[in-house]
Length: 114
Image (cartoon, rainbow, N blue to C red):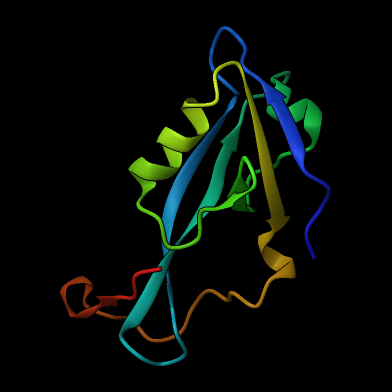
């Protein structure tokens, strides 16, 4: 379930969080899509104060879905909003995404575009 949107104000060091793109495979296939995980949050930043935490899955930036987008495009969407950005995120543990499963050779994966 999604939490209410988070509105962040850019500080002297940005918004105060870092993202990591992750592959999410469809079942036991080699097909995957890209999701974006919050990998770090600076204590005292607007992101921290708003409740964003490492391990949160970013789903929307400024009301637009970011599922399946390249990391660069997600960062561009975050930065193009000027001094404020609106994010939707949910805890990864509250999604159907699970870690583990069989190992895949990176070159064998087939990305499913949005």
